[in-house]
Amino acid sequence: MKITCQRLQVSGLILLLSLCLMVASPVYARGLPEFVPLVEANSAAVVNISTSRAAELPSGHPPLQLPEGMPEDGPFGDLLRRFFGERGGVPPRRGFDSTSLGSGFIISADGYVVTNHHVIQGADEIEVRLSDRRTFSAELVGSDPRTDVALLRIQASDLPTLTLGDSERLRVGEWVLAIGSPFGFDHSVTAGIVSAKGRNLPSESYVPFIQTDVAINPGNSGGPLFNMNGEVVGINSQIYSRTGGFMGLSFAIPIEVAMDVVEQLRDKGYVSRGWLGVIIQEVTRELADSFAMERPTGALVSRVLPDSPAHAAGLRTGDVILSFNGTEVPRSSALPPIVGRAPIDRPAQLDILRDGKPMTLTVVIGELPTETDAGPARARPPAAEPARFKPFGMHLESVPDELRSRLELAEGGVLITQVDAGPAQRAGIRRGDVLLMINSHAIQSPEQMREVVEALPAGRTARVLVQRPQGPIWLPLEIPK
Image 1 (cartoon, rainbow, N blue to C red):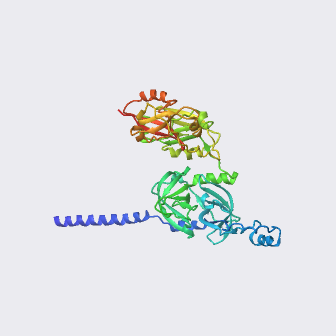
Image 2 (spheres, helix red, strand yellow):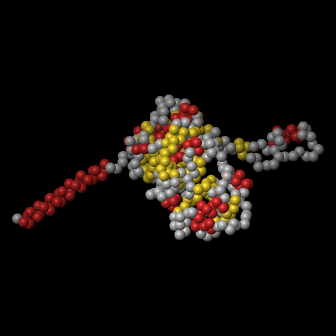
């Protein structure tokens, strides 16, 4: 009887495990994405875009000269002009059109098409080919290099369109799908997951990219990125690659950013952006320590541009911007997209940290200038005899007027003519830097800098602002004990 009970218990356990496996397997299977309905419902609104640009090829021959003494208006001169052009040289030849391929998608039944700016940049002709092989010559409504978005128009009606989604609701790890024309292969489908959100690339300050591992290759640019509901959540724009092909890192423009640009291009032909008027940098762990911050966060102001909204609001060099209109600024790269989408000529609230104390400023957002200065030319600082005062290995002298003019410095600062081994060298300070501030103290001269340096607490980290031809930058300087 005892053995029978044990056998029944074992049999029951096996039966229970079998039931669990039977239940668990379908649940796991249902978790896998089903791409076929999504592709069938949306492929028709994805288009292939080809562009061409005519090029004139040089003749490769120097102009022909008439023999000395032969008149240009004679019969021989007329013969040369007829065959070799008016100037006596070989006329330029019409070269082959340079062609590029990309993707796009239809957003309205009356013919508006979205793609990337870099797909149509410099094109003389733009051609849009639909999935049913109809081909249209497209008009460029407008494009925006800063977000890499372009809007086209084709003369057609009753076109298939795509449904736009909400990229803010995307979650890292969620499945996404792309349709495009990699290497000219129309309507290729690739899938992957969202790898990260809010990525900022060095060349793109106004786009918080969606990073995915969806296979994107040349020709996919401008195509849609879908969520599993069949909604467009992004425009495939860039890849990270050392070979020119896909290496697992793809970047898409969030659809909200793209459509804000599209609406402005459609309504007025250009894009307006909010402007604060500051140069910012990342708050590193060492710089955060100099501010007595618990963790690195925010955007550190390294320069306030004159006659800018930030200048009018009282923002200062050395302030750390923590939030903008209630939106946290976790990294410096997060600030430009937030400000860029802010309403122009409207007040905004800045939460900042100044000298370790939280403050709130109100700033009226301006409009970002359409053209920005390239910046001062690179200058080679003049050689000079090192001064006796050499704090942390830095040799100092007053800033020469010529260099001050090149760097567009109104006043103050000291020129670093040499950096010896020591704390300054470890901080990244270089020969030719102009030191402007230490912590919250503006440096006016080598003599005044001595007073500031002598008051620095030993064993702590100070933040040092230096000016370079590329712009100002804060550096963390460890004060020896």
